[in-house]
Image (cartoon, rainbow, N blue to C red; front, side):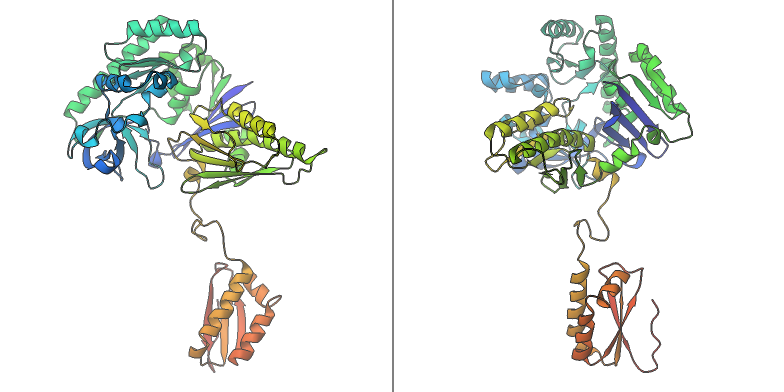
Length: 518
């Protein structure tokens, strides 16, 4: 399977596309005025402690105060070890290497937020989740500094290896190396790309990350509050660090400055990959050349068609994302159950693809077409779990419910693609619907009857959108006739193409009164 990184770098926007077999699989966008701050480290000040929520607000110089949970304040290694001792053996075995570093929700009540933080306290925090919608950033005091091969956790005493490295001998080798390299009480995780990497390269990166943390601490000691202490890499270098592996055939970028920046970055971490970097210099826009623009447009639509003729509908709400599967034009060749199963299995692949491409997170409810056989329901659920395995974001899928729904969660750290590229419709104010033309006509009828007592002129000019005018003078002309009889007035309908389809205005026309031209 061929894999490519295609980067469109401009002053006002940078887009990074991860392409597999010619299909857009992931898209990352960064704009200077709304850049992703996840990973940034700040010196902040606690502005409010919320005992009832076991959380606090922290000022880190953003428009909205950041939010920190009590479990995210447990930053020191001895605190982490204390809570690990409280876990049962069963709980410990259930935790993966990476999950051990996530929030231990079951232990939130062991220490109170007011025992750890107080107002006006100065703390160093890292953004774990960028602001989304009207929610502020989520921060943690458990710092993690990602490198090419390692993730250094200077405030947590723990050694871990990525779950994607399955070979037990390799896992053992990496743990032994990291045990000898890490400073005392520091935590470290070996990333997937560290598989097969020699001790020397791991030692060099460990030294670099430790030095980086010491510099951050030194800067934080004298920095004003609030202030930025460390900025995460831009989207281009993050893509090189996290996605550019030996499995990627090539990286293509259309900016000479970005091209040189990438080569300089690779000189430090992976010189052998420099030969796979290309500078795109053709006149045709790079995303057009790789047929990516149409895929981006498709990822912004609510309805996505399947090859068989079926389709899925993706609806975003405040609380969750609902995905509905329909047979559409597909009628099958044999029996109904087989037709439904084939549509659902095809939808599984598209749903997993769209979730990853659109970066949909949080609670997701999938309504597959009802299947009578339990074995078919289980087959669809297992197919979904399998399709989600290559998703880098953590997902959790529950079995099919009694109502035939599949509930799943996906870790959310930033805005979805639609929220980043779109805004609420100023016509419908984000409702997603407009009043039908016939409903507008009936509203006009009621308003004119309501205001008839205040209208003294013998004629009334009604200004409406052209499509409403066509309906009032055509299929719904009886409304105008009825009004003229009821009001004993002449009604003149005038179209105005500048009017919103729901907008209309009424004017009285007295004798010798010049009609208002739209």
